[in-house]
Image (cartoon, rainbow, N blue to C red; front, side, top):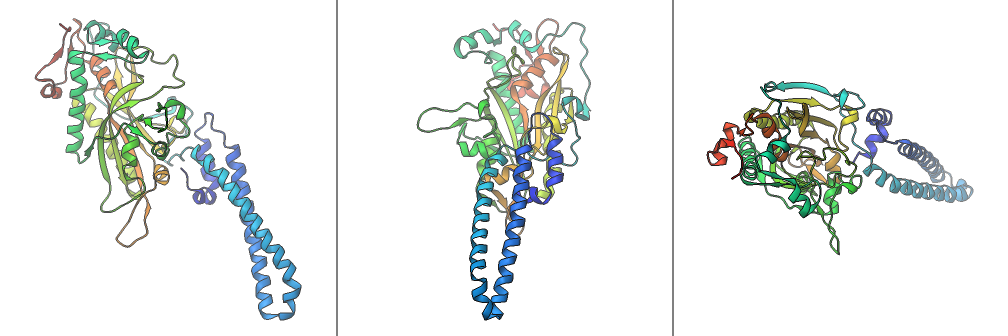
Length: 422
């Protein structure tokens, strides 16, 4: 959530950067309320100044006390009425601010869609095939290791059964990712998979994206997490962080998304599922550390792709393609030869103090100093299902088998390929 006082002091600049997000963002009510807020504050200060001046005169001139009495009463009532109007206005501003996105960082390029994103760097090159590469779901089904039909019978669309060595591959990837990140100083966390409305609001999923969430019915309302970002960021909600920053956490979890509004998109395969696995990276940093922390977090996520030998690129998202709560985002896009396209496998973002203000996460700059809002960051390190997709498509062979990256062999019991299920 944005800081009301910061917005008021930097109104034109904030509006310009918000408008750069484009899309369906309607700032008309936002502008009107802040204009009225400014007018009321000017009116309140003017009235208070008149009252103060009259009080000074009354202190030194006894004859004026009776004369100014009715005016003082009128000014007092006017101040009271203006304060009431200000409170009502700010009560309306509160919910509006919860639905207002973050301000893009000054280094974020202005653009309207993914076509305006900037490629920052690439790793490796596209694999060459002597045959036409298949899409991952064709590879998996031909091996007898992926079953979408039985999953649809059990749960409906956008679910899958992974079988045998493919199920083990997901488990292996999780262990490999967690091991790599803990080597880099991240503390492993196994979080709750059900969270409160307050926690979902703290990270910006609510109220704006409630239609995309699964929630429980009955007397206790809880939400299935869309990402481990939610419980891990809220791990420090309502706290003052002591000691050196940044704090770094990694967490494996299943993720649950209704995928509202995605009808017709990626209807086949593992790209867009209602349930999937992810290893999440979360950081808490000082404001002067957050840009450097974002670079580090992105590099840590990309290191997994590098060790797996997967060709990918790092893309800086433009203003029109950023997430709601983000102030700056890098996407890692892995090459999928079966699709002939780059697809997002990780999104690494800095949120500045946007989430920390909602969740009340603060830090103390030095002993005895006043607490300040921390900056939060997170990113996928990586989306496990999409990593499986990338392995199936990039390392497939003409005979239908799939070569496994060497770094995974210790996690796969020495298995070096995926072959037809027996």
